[in-house]
Amino acid sequence: LFSISYSRKTTSVFFGAWLTLWPFLFEKINKTKVVFSGDIVPSRERILLIANHRTEVDWMYLWDLALRKGCIGYIKYILKSSLMRLPIFGWAFHILEFIPVERKWEADESNMRRMLSTFKDPQDPLWLAIFPEGTDFT
Image 1 (cartoon, helix red, strand yellow):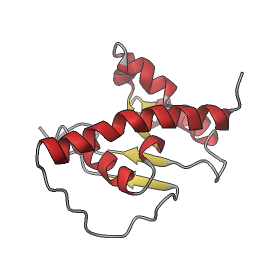
Image 2: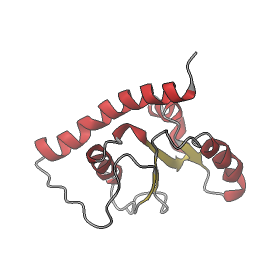
Image 3: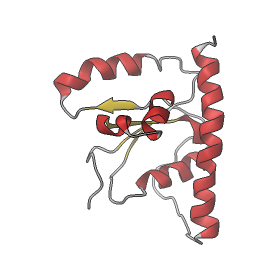
């Protein structure tokens, strides 16, 4: 019924509104001070985030950064395919266009090419996040 661009914008508004809650709770309620350092991430630009997966809340730091850069609803994750089968969350991951991987290039190449090819329009904001370690350090 809708164009892909319109659908993505609508989804990102709802996704972004929900994600905005977590940095607020993390910083204001929990009184956590978050300091970003390193390379400057341009606002509203398409980027590839490659991050270590050292804790269970690594993704929350990415949400915090995206919130400050005006891209909170545009984060897409490359994640292990088993997470796509979780009740409720798996359904949301499909709607949010997260990219599932089996961690075997032979199995993942065609799916990744197909899914990434849908993000060709440079006008669509995109933050693509991957944790190469695949799972948290614990």
